[in-house]
Each structure stands twice: as structure tokens, then as C-alpha cells.
Length: 278
Length: 334
Image (cartoon, rainbow over all chains, first blue to last red; front, side, top):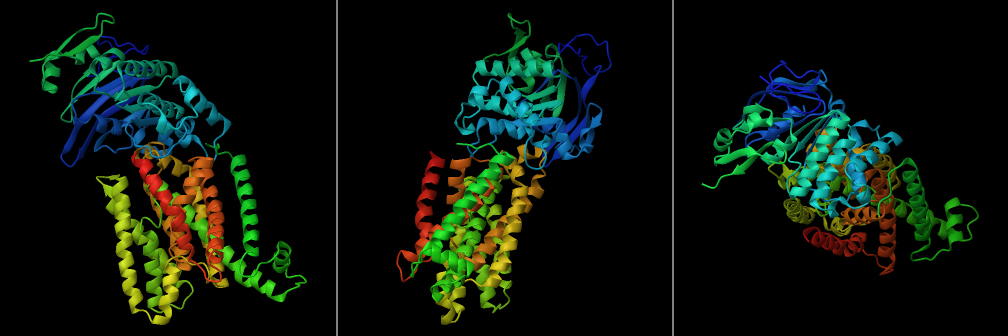
């Protein structure tokens, strides 16, 4: 059912293993229904250090799937296991210690300093009121990893879009989760920032041994940086696997209702998606 | 500017502001129709060898209760405003602007109208009025599961004006003897206070302040958004319910004894944010003590500026607060 993945982060094309050895995240048949929207049972697995991208048209259920994977939204059926723990049965605070989910569009009206914003990521680890030196250590670490040290004192309301996305990533990193979930981490970023964001996420996942799952509309970037793709359409996962398997021009043309061409990016050898003008 | 929220910084801020509050309080004791020297005030407080008997009476029976009331009410309103701003994620939220004070005032007046002679009846009814109004404005200001900033403010302003109309109606049913006093009280008045009221107010306000402080770190996370807070391990619904009840309680208690004193809940947290930043572990105590200081100063102004007559203290805070509100509103749009 699933494409096998190696643990060094690079996808393999052979079907030599029935699951991911040392799989960290196991999503088992999660389904959801809300008013007129339905997400059909979906399963996938990912190992530590891997980057999974959920792609698909607007309204196909990408963000819902991400919320379900976080364990915060209760699925109608199925379950999510992280390191062998059923996320649905973990208490909220305990879950927040191992799962971080961040959206990019949360409006901020209060002028937190960037460092304070990132420090909020420590919330599930801190006692009732005050941080420990250990918490401060991880805040500083997250700022460093995202190149935000120089901006740490600036108000979060006065930094650029690209810097804000990095601050959101830093907050999630400071949470030290085993599972990092990001909803459209590249939205509103220029191509340089987009590549920068996904490259750091990929490197950090490998370095820190966490699983990263993102929702994105950038198909070619997903192909470039993700180990594994899930293509959703109308609440169903219509295909999943390594980018080569999922990014099929015929399938994408149907799902996105516009003709596309998939070829190889000459610089990386990864699939590249191009819109074809009819 | 931001001051990092550590035990030490919180403690030094509290000590510093408490000292300032003490000085402001002592200074306010000397000012009034009869000017007293600091040493007379000191002797009056200690009740030891007063050179002038009336000085002791003025200090302990007239000015001291009034100043203590101003401190309690100021702390309550400023903290309530800070908490409401976090709850509604809107830096312009204020119990007065959102009509919550009017709801509390209506509750207190209804208690008076129904002839409540029980000391706790009017605070209890004011609390109920504040609770209902907050819930009402919150529901009106919510659009598609999200709080719409301007819808919320508009809902509050309209609610306040509607409640004022109802208050006028109830006032017209009161005997003329009560009307003048009640009208003055409505505009914010700290001149009438009994020892019983103070003894009732002090522990309840202290309890609500402590409760909100206990939740101060959760309030920080709530500013990021409800979803974000939930993903950071905060039980959002429970937090919102508790904050909502405590903020309404503070407004209700303050209004029941002092009427609708406006803009304190807006002005003081805003000043506080400029000095210590947005972290509630710093901001809440700063707002509480700052609110106490500002209201003691405002009330001193109210009772001296047109002496021997008096202004309602609500007029003083509104003159200072309304321009700040407009400034913040324009800046938020820009």
C-alpha cells in the first residue's frame, strides 16, 4: 500500500519492505465528516527525518487531514500513532509536547517581540508560570536554526512575510516536537524564501530526527524537497508515494482541472510540473 | 520595549509600582477642600496626638476609604480590560466601550429599583449584568467562528447605547430622591463607600486578580489564536470561560460601587504594554497597580479641579481615555 522509504531520508522505488522500518508516524485509516465535507479513510507512514507533503486542489481536505494527523481533530474512525503512542488518547498537554502544528495566517494584533513569540512554543513544557534556563536554551537554539537571532528583539508585527514564516517555524521548533505539521509554510513567500524554508525544514528534520508533514500548493517544490507525497482530491487520497509516482501528468491534469506537463528538472532530476496553456 | 517575564522582574515591577501607589495615595490624602500637611496625614492615619481633631476625621473617614476604593476599582477595571483584550484578541477591548459596564450598571440599578437593601444584592446583580453583556457582545462579534475586530467593537457600542436607554427608563421609574445620586453614580463616582462595601470588595477583587494571574501564561498563548493555543496544549474553552467569568466579575464589582468609569481598561493596559510589553505575567500586575495609581490621580483631580464642587471621576477618565481610544483605532486601521 505504501511506498517504502529509507531512513536516510531519500525515497526508494523498490517495494522491498511492507512498511517503514522504524516508522515514527503511522496514520491508520483516519476518516472525518463535517457537514458537506467528507474525508475518506486515509493511511500513510513516515519515518523520522522525513518530509511528507500533502498536495491537492482547494477544498480537497489537505488542512483537515493535517489537523487529524495532529491528533487535535478527532477522527470519525482510524487512529494516529506517533512512536507507538496513540495520539488520540494522549492528554492535550502531553500531545503538545510531541506534536507541533502551525498555520501561517494567524492574525497578530499584539506587538510581541520575535523572541517572545518563539518562546510561546515552550508552553507545553513550562511549569505554571515561569520558564527554566532549559526553555531559554531551546528558544535561543530555535532562533539560531532559523537565522532569527538578529531579529529577536523586533516586534512580530513589524517583520516581513518571509521572516514571519521563519518565526512560526522557530516557534514550532522550540516546542521540540517529534512531529512538525505546517500548513502552507511557503504561502506568500518569494521563490528564494520558499526554497530556503523547505530546505531548512528538510535539513532540520534529518538533523533533529522529527517527521515533517506540510500542506502546500507548490507542486514542483514538493517534488524537490518531499520524500513522500499525498495527493488529495475531493476528500480522498487519490495517490500517494514518492514524487515520481504521484506527479503523473494525466492524474494531475484531471485533479487540478487544467492540463499539466510533468518532466524532469534538469538540475536535480526530480519531477517538475509545468502548466500547459490550452 | 519589553521586559522579560522572570520572577525577579515581576517582583521588582510589583515592588516599584506598589511604592509609587503608596506615594500617590499619601499625596492624595493631603489634597482636598482642607489642605493637610504630610505629617498631619501621617498622624491622622496613626491616630496619635492629633493637633486638629477634624484632620483625623478627614483623613480616616472621608479621604482614606475613598482612596482605597479608587485603588480597588482602578485595579479591577484595568485588569478586566487587559483580560478582555486577551480573551477577545482585540487591543481595543474595554469593559466600558463594549457595553459591559452598562450591563453591570443596569444590573445594579435594577437591584436598587427592586429595593435591594442587602449589601451584596447590587454587586451580585452587577456581576450578572456584566456576564450577560459580555456573552451577548461576544456572540454578536463572532463571525463564522472567528472574532471580527470591528464587528465586535460596533456590537459593543450599540449594546452600550441600548443599555443606556434601558437605564434611563429604569431611572425614570425611581423616586426623584434617588435619581440625582444614581445619575451621578452612573457617570462614575467614588464618593460614597461604606466599610462593608470595602470589606466585601477587597477579597473578591483580590481573588479574581490572583485567578487571572494564575492563567497569565495561558493568556499569552491565547493571543496567538485559539487554534494555536490548542496546539500548544491550552484547554481553550475552559480558559476562555474562566477568564470571561473573572473579567465580568471584576467589572461587575467595580461598577456596583463606583458606576461606569470608562476607558481605564483601555488606557492603562496600553500604557502598560508600552512599558513592559505584552507578556501577561508582567502586564497583569502592571495594569492592576497602574490602574490603581491612575484612578487615584483621576479621582483626586475630580474632587479638586472644580472645588468645592466635584466632577464625576468618569468624566475625568473619559476626557483622557477617549482620545487614546481614537488614536489606537486609527493606528489599528493604518
